[in-house]
Image (cartoon, rainbow, N blue to C red; front, top):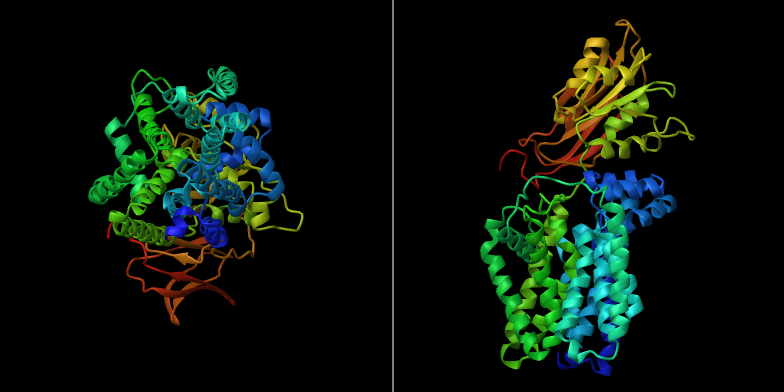
Length: 580
C-alpha cells in the first residue's frame, strides 16, 4: 500500500497495467448493449439536427437552448458511421472514455497522489450516472470531457489549451461555460501565489469570454424563453445533485436520504482532511462541487426569462470531473492517515460494491422495447414508392423522423431502397380547416401515420377533420399509435401483401406488447412449452399485438406464422407498469 501511495519505481509498471485494465472496463461498461434500447426524444433531436445543413441546424440549436459544437461534430460523425442506435451513441461513448481518463489526470495533478487518482478513476468508471450520460446521443459527455480538460490545462498552466478547452466547454453546453467562472474564482483566491502567467491567463479568459459573447449575440434573439416560474427550489437542487453523485438516483429522492447523508458525510470528511493537506487544490474541487446547484438555484429565480422550468439529472453531469476528483482526494487522505487507514479502505470498498450493484441494476433495467420500429416497418411493407404518406404527432416529430428515415434500410423492399418519403402535418392551428385544406389540396388517397396524436391540442382536431372529409378504409392500431389508409372512394382497394415482419425485440416484460406482421388469413400463435398461449387472425394484412401479462411464466416463447417461428424471452426482472 505504501508503495502504491507514494508511486515508487517498483510500482510503476503494475500501476500502468492497472490503468489500462480500468480504461478497458470503462469502454466495456459504456459500449455494453449500447445499441439495444429505443432512441429517446432528445436523441432523436440530435439525429434530426445532424442531418440538416450546418447553418439550419445552428439556428435550430440556438432556439432549442443549446450551443452548437456537439451538433457540428455530430453532423460529421453520422456521415462517417451512418445512423443506428449504436452509431449515434458510440460518439458519446468516445467522449465518456476520454472524460474518465481526464478525471484521473485532473485528480493526479491536484493531489500528486496515484492513490487519489486511481480511486477517482475507479469510482467514475463504476458510476451509473456517468455511464448513462456517456451512452446518450447528446452533448453531455462532450461537455463533461471539455470541463475536465479545461480544469486540467488550467492547473498545468497551459493557457492556450485552456482557451480551447473553455471554448469547447462553453459551446457544448451552457453550463460548461461556468467552468471558467470556477477557475477565475479559484485564481482570484490565490492571485498572490500565481504571478508567473497572469497576463496569459487574463488573455485566455478574455478570448473565451469573447467567443461566448459572440454566440450570445447570435443566439439571444433565437433562444426559447419561458415566462413561467421555475418548478424547482434551491433545496431540491442540492438534494438532487447529492443523490445523483451518491446513489445515481433521480426519482423518489426521499427514499435514499439515510444512505445519501452517510456517503455525503464520508465525502465532506475526506475533503476536510484533503483541505488540511492541500488547501489550494481542494478549494478548486470544492468550488466545482458547490457551483452547479448554486447556478441552477439562481436560474430558478422568476426574474430569469429563459427556459429553465425543469430540473433534470443531466444538468449535473457536466461537473462530474470535480466531484470524482473530490472522492479520490478525500478517500486518499483517509487511507494515507495510519489511524483511520482501515476505515478509509472499508469505505472505499463499500462505495465500489455499492456502485457495482447499481451498475448491475442499471444493466437489468435497459432492454429494447418496440416503440416505433415494427410500426415503421409496416409502413415500408404496405406502401409503394408513389404513395402519399403523412403523419400527425402530438410532439414526437423528431422521433418519428428518426425511424421513418431508416425504414427503407431496416426492412428493404430491394437493395436500392430509399427512406420512405413522408410529409408531417403541422400541429393544430387556430384555423384547422384552412390548414388542412392547404395540406391535402388535390389529394384523393393517402396513408396516415398517427404517433401519440392524443397529446395534441385541441385534441384530435386534425384526425377529426380527416374523418369528416375522407373515408378511412383501412386501419392498424399500434398501441397509442396507428396506421390508416384514407381515400375519397370508400370502395378503394386495400393492400394485399405477403410480407411477414418479425418481432424486433428478444426480451419482453409484463406490460409490453410484442408485435408481428402477418398476411391476410394467416393465423399467428403465441406458444410456450409446446402450448398455445394466445392466437391472432385477421382477414387483412395486420400488425398483430400480443400483450405480455404479469401471470405469464418466465421463459422462452415463440410466435409462429405458418412455417415461420420467431423466439423471444419473457422475464419478470422488472415490475410491470401500474404496480408491484
